Length: 187
Image (tube, rainbow, N blue to C red):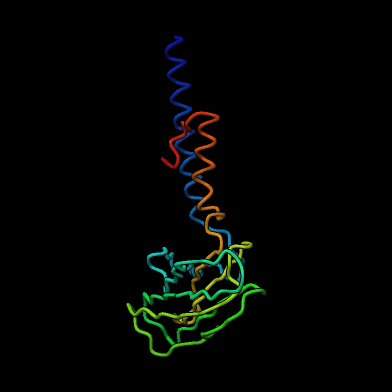
């Protein structure tokens, strides 16, 4: 008798569990939307990974960043167009207050840039040195359909102080104190 009762309870629980899962699955399908869009398909943006982005932007690190003073530093930015543009390719450099442009354009645009084409932009500046952390960025944008999409890159006057440079050292110091991590993440 006891085995029969246990079997009945387990079977009843299984039926309730399956029914509940089906109800939740069905409920998830019906989205809650404002009355004005009920029955209409809602637009969702196409997911774009970095490798599928309209533009890829990079700044090559200068060969030598002065320790101090106002020596010249030439920055070279490269913009790769990955997809067809409807309109011009535009770019703009952002500089800290104490960095001056000696040669090159702060912003400009290029017409008729084709997919796969790389546009190289150069900027020569003074005041970009290792006295304190200074960041210079290059932003690029273009029109794809009705959307204006862009990308950017940043270069630091003190790359040794950036998070990317400091994080591995911090991890090693933590492992030395606490022992190696056992979570498996990042390994």
